[in-house]
Image 1 (cartoon, one colour):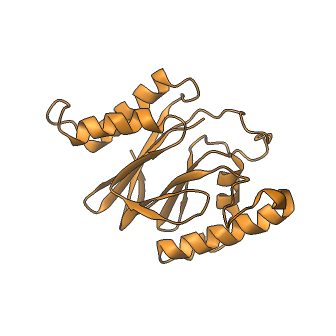
Image 2 (cartoon, helix red, strand yellow):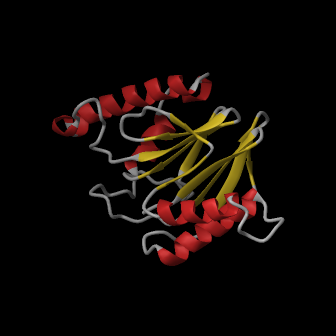
Length: 192
């Protein structure tokens, strides 16, 4: 279970997530997880964050070409090729209509130029703010409250995202752990 939040702020794109790793998927995730429990991977000028099948993050960590991808369409094409190759090995009968649904994954792609939501089709959809994962509805509700100005004046986007993850962690059984947060701009990725 996961919660990932992304939001644009000028020339920065912020990403926040919980760090709880669950084993609700049908695949034993032990060999796939890195020492960190972050739900995102920084590759070149891109941050890729995924919810759903935990194997997705392992595939993205290993996917060639992401470090030098120039456009979000390049990312889309690389991910489609990588997941299609993996799908041929793992579950070709479940790959239907161009969807790589054997992974049941969705997430966010972030760069200094934008934020995109992607699902199993890997078609990027531009967003100014979005959330992914089982706790996304809670996190997005908190972010909308902040966006509408209903929180105390002076609360920064970073603080609102931290609150969104904390609320989700406390109300969604599958989410939890520490909050990971950072932003990407023209100078790279910065953890806060």
